[in-house]
Length: 358
Image (cartoon, rainbow, N blue to C red; front, side, top):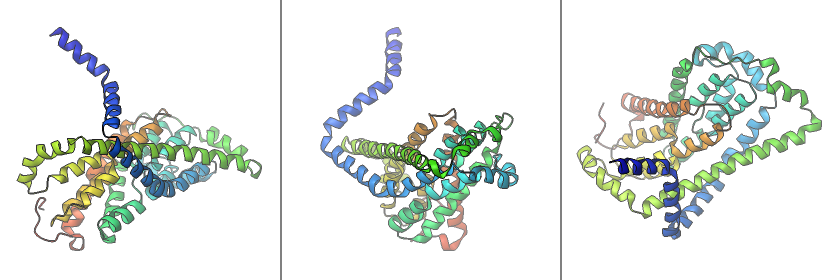
C-alpha cells in the first residue's frame, strides 16, 4: 500500500512532465496530420487573428500613454461605481473588450494595474467581464458565415453583452471590503504623460508596436498549439471513444453524439468547436444556438491560457476570470434561451423541439 501511494505521489508530482512527453511522442506518431493542423492554425492566425487584433493592441497601448483613462475616470465614476464598483476608467476596458475580442480586455486590465490606473481589486473585477468575443467574430463568423443568418449573429451578440454586464454586476461584490488605495496623482500614467511629446512620439510608437506584436505572436502560438492538440485527439481516436461513452446519453436525449464531442472541442478551442457544432444538422437549431452562446461566453481553454500568460506578469489573480467566464457562458446561454422561446422572431427551429422545451 505504501509503495502504491508513493507511486501515485510520483505521478502527481511529474504529471505535467508526463503530459508533455506524451505530447512530444504524439507529434512524432501523427506527424503528417499534425503538419496539416499546424498549417491550418498558422493560416487562421495570419488571416483572422492578426488583421482583427493587432490594430486594437497597438491602439490600446498608445491610449495608455494619453489622458483618456483619467478623463473617463472623472466622467464615468458616478455611473461605474454603483453598478460595477470600478472607477470610470473601466469604461475604456469595457468598450474595447466588446469591440475587439479576446484577449484585449485582459490586456487592458493588466495595463491598468501596471500603470496604477485602477486598484488591484478593480482590475480583477475588470478581468471577470471585459474579456469578450468581438462583434466581428460573433456576427460575421458565427452568424453570417456559419449559421447563414445575421439575425442569429445579432442575437448572439446581444445575449453575449447582456451576459457580460450581468457578470460585471455580480462581481461588484468581489473583495468589496478590501480595496487597494490608488493615488491617481502619482500614478505611473501621470509619469508617462509628463514625458509624452512629438519629440519622443517615435519611441512611443515603437514600444506600442513591439508590445502589440509580442502579444499577437503569443496568441498565434496558442492557436497553432490547440490546432495540433485537436488533430492529435482525432488521429488517436480519443474522440471516437468519447462518442462511444456518450452515445447512450445522446440516444436518450435524441441528439447526435457528435454534438457532445463538438462541444468538448469548443471547450478546448472556441473557433474549432463552434465550427463543428454549427455543421451539425438538427431541426432544433435553437439547441445549437444556445450551445454556441455558451461557448462564446466561456471562451475556452485556449483563451484561458492566453489570458493566464498575460495576467501572470502582474499581481492579479486569475480566479475572478475563470469564475467570470463560467458565469458568462451560463448567463449568455440563459438569455439566448429566453429570447428564442419567448420572442417569436428568434425561434429558428425547423420543426418540433428535440431536446429543450420551455
